[in-house]
Length: 365
Ligand code: SF4
Image 1: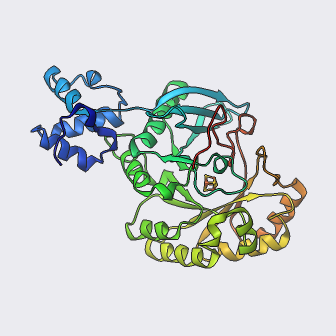
Image 2: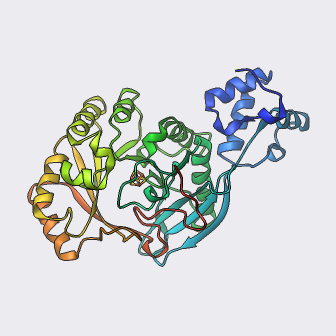
Image 3: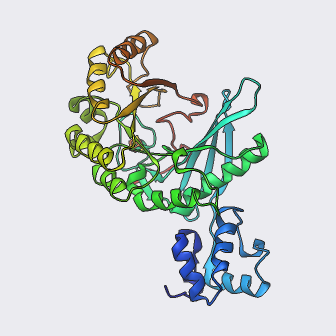
């Protein structure tokens, strides 16, 4: 890699992988430990400028400032739900409308101490896939995030957790705005940084990446033996209903998804999680549950049944409790591992399917 010196073409260090950062340091003639120091400043301490990198000499900091930059997402505001969920609004560098939301979902022990601290991160501003129940899908698509912008969300919230709860985050789910596998490289690079001991050092077992079912990328995850967990946003258990609410299904139907899921399991022997939003009188009948059970048996898997929060402009509504009970009975009768998830943060529009930037937001492509 050649180091550029044109001030308008300064290298974005947070768009480089660890290996690329090593190359960048070598191109500048720096000793190899300097790239580790840079990596730690960027991804462990989360500094916003070279001036804060105090174990680098003044001359080196000035030199770095001439050839590189360290853009950071900007915290705009946060809202706390009555159940403790916190939704964050961040602005990305560049256009004013490039904003994203992230969510912290804390679980507490009976004595009030923090247990699991799960962060739901966004991977894109808007989304191209246009699922009918999803607020993000209604925004249109603006752009994908860099891996640095994804790590920034985690880092900001991790530092807040340290201050607020006396411990850092424990889990990450890539289930915020955007389709994670449509931004494959940034997802894989960000997870690799987050699990690095010189960064947050989170175990890959505590990271889950979700997808609406991009079959090529599911196979790629398997081929590359990516170590994090895979969740599939299913939301309907037959092609007819899935076509109706998820346009992706017309090109990647359940048969193709089955082949990809089985390929993934054969390569990695890692169970898959299905996410299934339960909609009133749409996908919540006993017959739907029986069809879902068949899908869950494609490979060792479990399913999360998620109670849907209403989204403005969406005619689908959350299922009723009596229908949920019957649905669960069908799954249990078929020995399916299923958990009901009550979506959190619905009073601040932080629940599943609710993330979208509303204020003065133009529509994306
Ligand atoms: Fe995009 Fe996911 Fe929303 Fe579908 S559910 S529109 S893939 S963000």
